[in-house]
Length: 234
Ligand SMILES: Nc1ncnc2c1ncn2[C@@H]1O[C@H](COP(=O)(O)OP(=O)(O)OP(=O)(O)O)[C@@H](O)[C@H]1O
Ligand SMILES: [Mg+2]
Image (cartoon, rainbow, N blue to C red; front, side, top):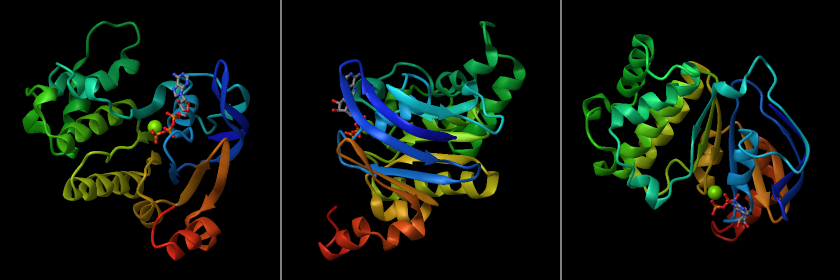
C-alpha cells in the first residue's frame, strides 16, 4: 500500500498534508501522535471510507478493498452494542457474502476458527455489551480477521484495557504479523510498545507527518531521543 503526497481531511477542513509512505506485505506499521493529529482520519482514508482531498493511495500487490480487516476506534455507544459475540464476529464475513443475505457453513466455520484463535469461543452466545473491555477487543479482532488474511488496520485496540489485557492484545497482534504474515497498521498512544513491536513508525504532528521510517531510524531520531531526555513525554 502506498500513499503519495496525500492531503487528508473533511469538506472544509484540511487535517494533514504531504503524507507519503509505503507499507509492504508483512510490515507492522505503528501510527502515533497527539489527539486530533489525524490518525483515525488517515486510517479511514486508507480504507476508502472517505476520499483523500488530494494525492493518491494505491493498495497494490493483489490487495482488494474488500479484503481489509478493520478494528475501529471504540466509542461508548459501540461498547453497548446489543448483539451476540457470534453475530458480531460473523459480520466480518459480510464482504464475502456480497448480496447473499445469509452465512454459509464455511463462513460460520471461519468465524468459529477465529473465535478459537482469540480465546473467545466459549463466549459466542453471550451479549457483546456484557463483556469486559479486553474480551470486546478480542471479539472485534476476530471480526476483522474474518474479513482478511492480508492486512489488519487497528485503531487504538488497547485503549481502556488493563495492563495484562493490553500485553495479551499486543502479543496476539504480533503473533498474527510474525506467524501468519498478516500486514498490520495500528494506531497507538503507546510509543514504548510501538518501538518494541513495530517494523515501521509513522509519527503524526500538526497538519503533517513528523516522521516515517523503520523502527531503527525512529530510535535514532529526535522525536525518540528528545522524548527520552524529557523523561518519557512526547
Ligand atoms: N467526521 C468529521 N468531520 C469533520 N471533522 C472531523 C471528523 N472527524 C474528525 N474530524 C476532525 O479531524 C481532526 C483529526 O481527527 P482524528 O479523529 O483523525 O484524530 P486522531 O489523531 O485519531 O485523534 P485521537 O488520538 O483523539 O483518536 C480533528 O480536528 C477532528 O475534530
Ligand atoms: Mg483516533
